Length: 305
Image (tube, rainbow, N blue to C red; front, side, top):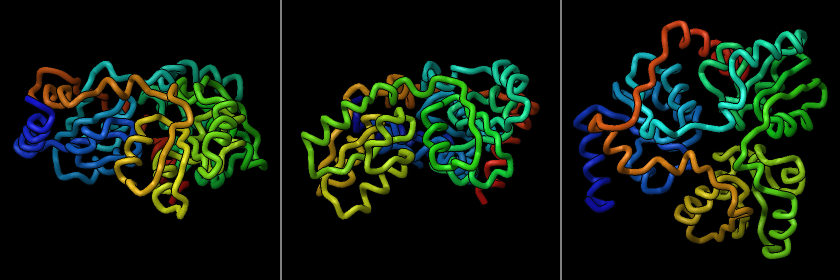
């Protein structure tokens, strides 16, 4: 089958088999075209909760599918490509966090949602890149241990100066590829463009940018801005999506090196094979794992209103 035929067959089969397809923002546009919902990992999980279908296929990476299962435990949740992992999510384990708690006994452990379900069982609260400022700002605790992204954590700490932060983890290897020299070069090449970056970038990059925010925040900013040129400092698929969705505007990539290969391995063929039961993987979490990993997510919802 060619691409169009494959997409049409997937659209037919997902209705027949009661399947909701989720596509993360970093996926290729051809996957967006067959998905029921597109967005960030937490937003997709909320959509999965509300979706009437009993089966969910995640076009993303493993921790995202685990989050869906945590928030929608009554559904069958599948990861379209079983090899799609996240290097940042694998940087720290639950055992690592338990050791950190002994090292920082007075700190509340705050974890980025880009972590495994197992690690979430050991932390106090979860944040997303779009909610982190509000969640941590609303926390009564003054000492925060932020894992596993010191770049996002440092960006938050620079704005919430009344709290004390400690960090563990190395952050996103793809966003670390973007440098301050990339920003300076972009200023020279595109003087009329605004530079929009993700706070997973290093501090030297976010400090030089015109805007720093989540993936959905970047896309919203670009769509609503009266400006016509933008340099995008996050996973390069976002540049492609914005070019399609905003044909009257011009978008440049801040760094061609900012590519998440783990996201890119998921294909239309993977989705089709997952539907047919010949590929993909069903995410299985025990009731205890779901209950314990849900607690810090529930606290995020409580603090975020």
